[in-house]
Length: 307
Ligand SMILES: NC(=O)c1ccc[n+]([C@@H]2O[C@H](COP(=O)([O-])OP(=O)(O)OC[C@H]3O[C@@H](n4cnc5c(N)ncnc54)[C@H](OP(=O)(O)O)[C@@H]3O)[C@@H](O)[C@H]2O)c1
Image (cartoon, rainbow, N blue to C red; front, side, top):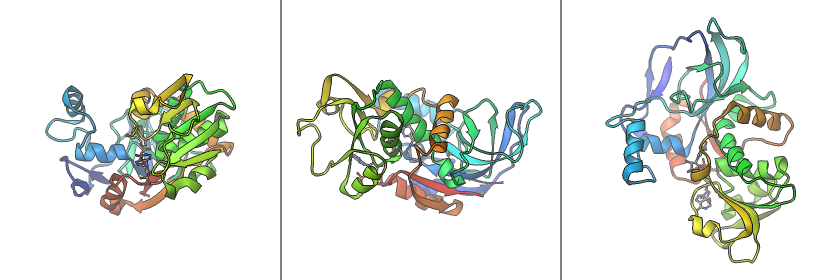
């Protein structure tokens, strides 16, 4: 099968389209013919080893990712596709079903024509109203936004501010805060994305290059930094006294759960959530896709079409 491998850390050009053997599912696994995956900022960070951390944390990350070269040479933390075959003990899925999944806990691997997933992993039937390209973009950023916002214990009508509202996590957070939790949502993004963020359900939008949300007197029950670019001191300045401050870096551990994916599927099925797709690249243009994502200005998600 074709797969995109990286065997050394470095610029986008370290990603190489290569032929490798197709995997065989174990008894409890399904074999997925991958139709689409994504390029996230996380993929570009793992590829370059340009981590926004230092000291012991960076050392630990190097041990996890691979000291001298990457331990997990196929990136891609989410995917959509069709079940091609199932292991002997699989009961929940059948060949021919369309699924979407997170590969976060199974060594990644979305950048390949086939991937084996445990049937009890973070996978679910693909929402029928989404294309494969759209469905691949839901799991990672969707579960992250959902998990963080759950910690906010949001009440209907409560004022919630989402900072970094135009990214993959932010575009999910705006829709979930507004259409699932019923909050009164303010989205903070750059001028080019104001209309997009409004269309996702924000009641108010603010351009962070012209306005400082901590200086207009408004206060919020929940402030969620969905892009991780605010200092906590700054982020907490516009909180109400009992308000909750959430940060995508500090609060996203534990997001990767099948219950979260199932809830996202339900929200997609009922029209409350739709992934925002900025660009779709063919498999062969993975280098260009990484360059674009790494620049840091994508709107929502960047998808790689495989099958
Ligand atoms: N995506 C995932 O699946 C996932 C999962 C877990 C954790 N995370 C983490 O969550 C963070 C956000 O990820 P993401 O995928 O949502 O990022 P992203 O999509 O790459 O974020 C890019 C967006 O952020 C906006 N932006 C850039 N600088 C900004 C600033 N200073 N203030 C406000 N907005 C700014 C950009 O638009 P402008 O430049 O036009 O403002 C662009 O729309 C990352 O640290 C990532 O590692 C992501």
